[in-house]
Image (cartoon, rainbow, N blue to C red; front, side, top):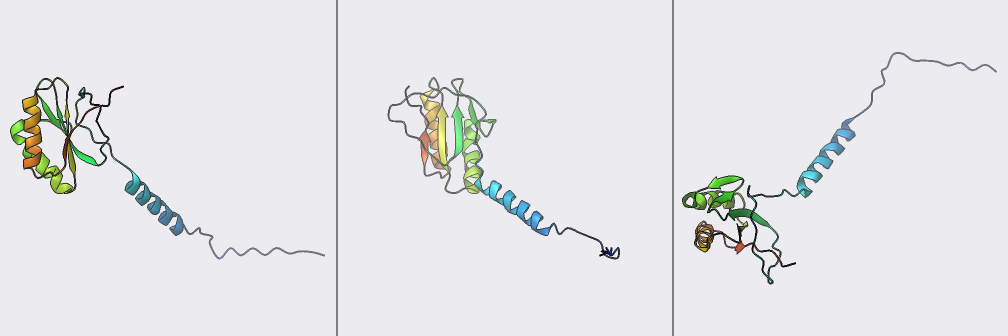
Length: 135
């Protein structure tokens, strides 16, 4: 018995990649939606220790006050007189945003209170001062 093989060279073979592209876009959207971005102030501070310190989630406005009297927000040094404007802009992007003042343990109390006051005047309802739990 003899078998014959017939080859048809008229049509071209193509792979449909539409489902693959759809899957890549779905994965991209998933990773963007579930990723969390770390906010930084741009300067390291030694937070004071407090036994009653609690972890606060969803702090999207971070203001650092250094022992040298500098104020940092979003990796930029800010003057106390313009802090309210910065916070108002950040709060306009996220109206439910909470503000956390990251004050160095050697920072002047007066400057920390001024930063708290500017955050409240900017319209932020939830303002806290960061502290570390003792070891």
